[in-house]
Image 1 (spheres, helix red, strand yellow):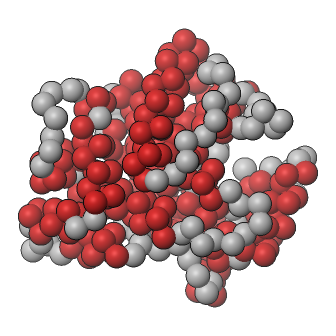
Image 2 (cartoon, rainbow, N blue to C red):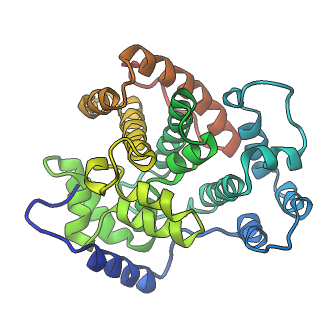
Length: 307
């Protein structure tokens, strides 16, 4: 969503992001196990045993990977207890993204930005990820691990703003709380780019495939991304918009309910009936509780009624 008062050059936007990242004193970044795994994943001579050994050294990450590999969305079958087999089932790119997320969740709690709800941010991200996987499973047109990664990291730019520019971003969030102007527009006015654009650049820098990073860039405006109608990137961007809007609706506090208009509109475009949306959401909320316990985040109060 762009500020209607301005026309922005994409190359200028990327330049603004690069200058922001270079000037930042702190940014969310992989550490420890996630960093070691990322280095191995880039090494063509590294074997699966070496990668599994790195994952095995981190109990939280081991549990996260095994939970993902054993989820019912992979068709049932015998439970997997071996990390090597779990990594084969998920794929190295998905495991690298899981390692990145666990690292960011665990190491970023020192973010000091007024109005930025750290636990709420990751709760919404995990619910979006679960919803994306459910949509991928329903449509059977893109890999579920890729869909989960997209949902999990699609708004990482918000965490980057809160980490790198806590004072300035606190002011943006203050204005957003007052209502009337979309958060993305407020971010563009303050920084020259929004959190979707920042997320896309960060994900590409962290080794997420460019095609997936482009989907994140256009998640709020799938029609504006220049994707071919009904192409995989177009439908992925639409599914990401639907999943994010559903997560926001379900987790919104009672005193600030979210409008469900975007949910209904995007569900209609993707041809997902309202009854299926309700069932997918119920299952994803149940999954969310397991994910939150696994990474040590508080389980929220009863969410808004499912549509």
